Image (cartoon, rainbow, N blue to C red; front, side):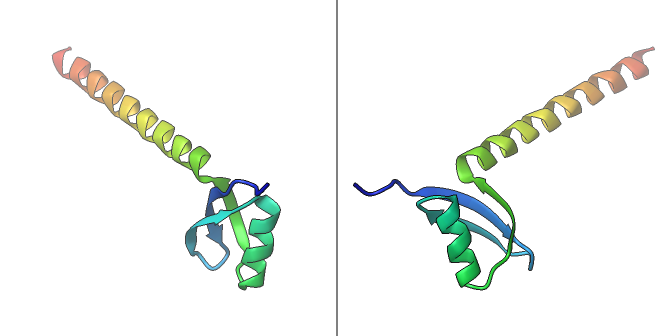
Length: 76
């Protein structure tokens, strides 16, 4: 039985970013080091995308709140 592949978001110390597919975290680390990359940030792509979406929603809400406050200031 073959393990399922997981897609990871990877940032290396040289500043490169990758979407890298591997069986597990340990295999990913071994493969990156074998290819000469030193990872500084690794997260499964599904978690990374969820974080990005949450951050974008938070920015949208902050912007909406800021506009509402500015509108209240102008009307006062």
